[in-house]
Length: 72
Image (tube, rainbow, N blue to C red; front, top):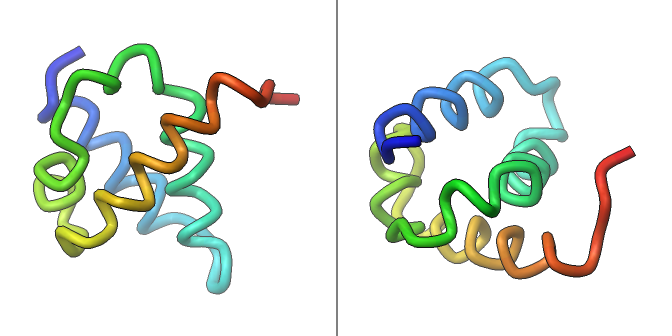
């Protein structure tokens, strides 16, 4: 997966999330795609998805959580 493809998925999920659940969707994206995005710059991924650079820190947290959680 390229960083641009990941950014498109993240942007779509973030934009379509109900109010109050946008950051939740960001975390779920990071957990679900951790194996595919782990080598990307999370700040760059966030920016390419149209989010603030600081959201890269939240993506990084989600990727790190992926080792400890499973999707239902």
